[in-house]
Image 1 (spheres, rainbow over the protein chains, first blue to last red):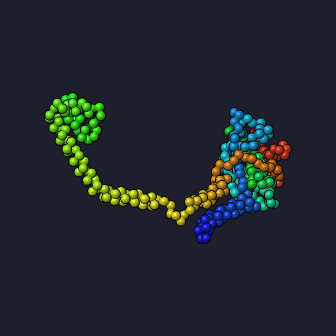
Image 2 (cartoon, rainbow over the protein chains, first blue to last red; image 1 turned 135 degrees about the vertical axis):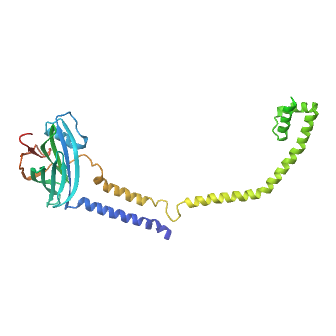
Image 3 (cartoon, rainbow over the protein chains, first blue to last red; image 1 turned 60 degrees about the vertical axis):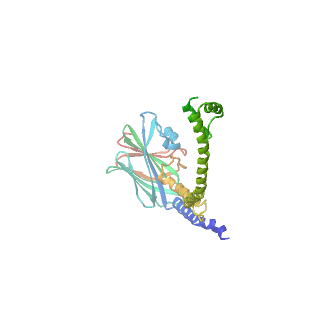
Length: 154
Length: 158
């Protein structure tokens, strides 16, 4: 009898640990008051015809929206931010982006976005996105082309 | 056959290693060589006596050799027992921790590793306000299937 229950007893701590992990994982992944903000910096130019595979399924969309021949991801960072918490992202060319999640209805995300170039404010905007949504901010010149920033939020 | 070869053959005969085809040749030589015949006669007497002596010593030593091998086997078995997993740990005990580690790796994977390429689920974006101190800003909307773009025009450069 005792030996028959031994495997169950041996498994119990591991199962409890698994359950805890799943609960914690689920809690982090679905918390409505945190937003995972992903910012990618793309260098678009007419130098060559390179298309960075890291751009995923937006490659075709970039080509259909802009007249550049080359798109290369220079940097990508993701931060998980609470509502009201400021996330700072370093961008190419001594620029910075400050993103602050604002209070929003469920399944929606509101972001206050500020892009600075040194002391100058290049852009200040407030965006409303669905979770998993994306917006592009482009235009700042960089080398022989421009920068296009991908802002996505989950 | 010369005497030197004959003595070598006599030694082989005493050891029981003489080839059958050489027996006749050796016998012919012994028949005509008294010195070698004497050697052969001596070997024939000493060989079996020596064999009997060695066998008797081996028989005396056998119990001690058996005891020694018993100890060696016991030592080997003891070493094996020491390296074996204790019986109270089930053989599958590694499975739950391995499973837990796998789940942990899956949970952590999206945050600590290179992320998948951008695959947005929606381009539905509302721009509540937009302004710039130093540039002209344009809002570009080319349809539902394409992302909305905020374009910063710095000093008419782009």
